[in-house]
Amino acid sequence: MTIKRILIVSGTHGNEINPIWAVKQLNREENSLSHGVEYEYIIGNPVAYEKGCRYIDVDLNRSFKEIENYDQHSNNFYETNRANFLVDEFGIDGSKPCQIAIDLHTTTANMGTSIVLYGRRFKDFCLAALLQNKFGLPIYLHEKDNAQTGFLVEAWPCGLVIEIGAVAQNFYDSNIINRFLIILRSLREEIDKLKKNLIELPKELVVHVHQGSIDYPRDEKGNIDGLIHPQRINQDWKLIKRGDPLFLDSQGLIHEYGGDELVWPVFIGEVAYKEKKIAMSYTKKEVIFSNNQWVYEFESL
Ligand SMILES: [Zn+2]
Image (cartoon, rainbow, N blue to C red):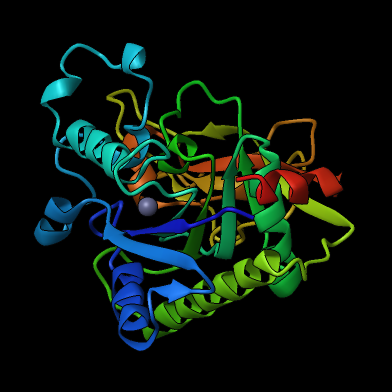
């Protein structure tokens, strides 16, 4: 295995401050060099972090697009320039090339500790399978959503998001910080084992595949007119079927799930997604049998 450098990004969203604290703590107690692998820790969006907001101009975690996909004004955006800087510095052809990027996020939704993957890259499957095997973490596989592109980890050959909640934005929670520390230390252990060929993949990877997102009920002016229904709030990763309640509007009317498919909702009521008109996203469960090719591709990084 030729992995030399791993990028750990916290504060990609400036108001998700717990991973920033976790990394600060980790940095103090552990050497950045481990079994020949060097760890680079960086704050994704330092200006937004200083100001306590998610971003300055646009969402940094949607700004890692191919240049031909930029709109004409985006060159003036702080986050577009920041994304270019991160790739120029730490991208695979950058001045300090990193083979893997781990992007740390928090959510206000009751998701627990989860992994987010973008697309079906075998190298990502390998890393995710090891973490899932160790902790039983749910995996949200995001794919085929043209409205949501340009994610940070997609700009690296291998990478995943660690997403932990529920925690409010700009609020330090020591339990959340501890969970980040546990995951980050384990990640280092697993990568060390991979280096020494001591890894055995679990038989399968269970993923929740993104199907689409739904908005809140809205009034004629376009304002949100609905609460997450009391039976749905905090019920992330729990199966719903036709007729199950989703929202309660100001008239007291219940808005139900009307689809035929069984789905598992995630990011229920995530505060940051209101501006994206997302009240929750639907996923479907899928079991993927693991394949030694995952390890070969990981080793060839
Ligand atoms: Zn985030």
